[in-house]
Image (cartoon, one colour):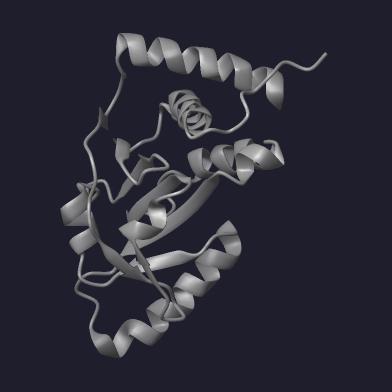
Length: 187
């Protein structure tokens, strides 16, 4: 499913833009935040700029809620060309608000394990402000946000990720808009 599938997805993205988005999608502009990796490295909204970002924001209880969707997105990502992969970053953030300081070392260990399992850095939102400021906190415990290369939040999906094809389509559309080589069909 390399380039010819991406061409179909890019076409579907144009149709989706023309006819609106289904499901539990909301869209708005930018948000400000600061989250922390298990090793103390900070990640802020400024680091969203330059790449299209797929960001999962979840509670501890919500991290496995959309396992099938995460696996499908990981599979989709691994099938893409290096040119497209280079323009996308994947980020995981766990809402750790209310975690007493005494338990943070245990959380950091858990985040390291999650990062190794997912193949990405997983950050902690220690005060819950990212979820609040960016409109990502959800009673379901899980949401996925797509940010364009200018760090503008373009879509948020909450709860059950049933729109996986739409998410992949929008992801490709944003990568193409960011100046990636347009997907072409194989000969």
